[in-house]
Amino acid sequence: MKGISEQEAESGKLLYSDENHKFIWLGWSYKGAGEVQANQYLIISGREAVLLDPGGVHVFPFIITNISRYISLEQIRYIFYSHQDPDVSSGIGIFMNVCPNAKILISRLWIRFLPHFGAADTSGVEAIQDSGKTIDLPFSRLHIIPAHFLHSEGNFSLYDSRSKILFSGDIGASVIPENDTYFEVEDFEKHVKYMEWFHKRYMKSNKVLRKWVSMVRKYEVDIIAPQHGAIFRGENVKRFLSWLENLKCGDDILDEIYGY
Ligand SMILES: [Fe+2]
Ligand SMILES: [Fe+2]
Image (cartoon, rainbow, N blue to C red):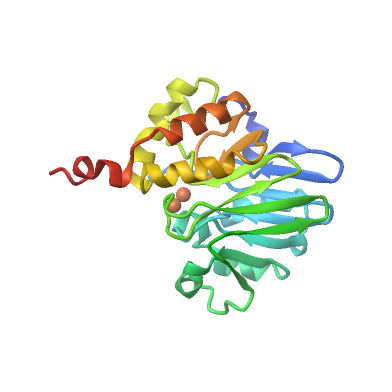
């Protein structure tokens, strides 16, 4: 993959690091065979950690191995789930088992669905209310920002104020062919073709996109790190937000999607 070494693909890459705080991409867990590629991330702040969208059972051994390179599993204080999709949260039962001190954070809309993913006991789950919330870590404040209908009805992004990285979940996702994979967007115009179909088909409407973009612009964002595909940095963050606020999708192009 362009932009990272083989070692980083295998064991993960620091997107931000200072003496007290780190934001880590947990490696190239994708094994092909028709699955959707997904990124998993870990925030470490002092002695505490937050795991973001760790995914399903089939990536579990890879993710746990890479988390253990940095911290012990007991240090994970929260597991954040942007929404209820299987590539995000279907491994919840097994992750809860191995992270004994972790509280699960997910939209209040999805709590009752979690037993179907193997999380029979939801007493360790904290419902995020629709307006989001903030979480104070030893060296950062996390802002959980509403992103409802983009695409899930109960959906959140997460902004880490120390690293200035926005974890955007499915927003900004790209599906890049295996012969052209790259870690970070360099040519935005070219990158659009790897994002466009997904956003037009999976996102609710331009009105909701604009709502989200206006909220995100209140934060100083250095990097947007999505759950799928390449990350955006610097000027490409701005280009992405401008592209998104002008995109017609979902409700806006209903006839095109339905085909009549
Ligand atoms: Fe999704
Ligand atoms: Fe996803």
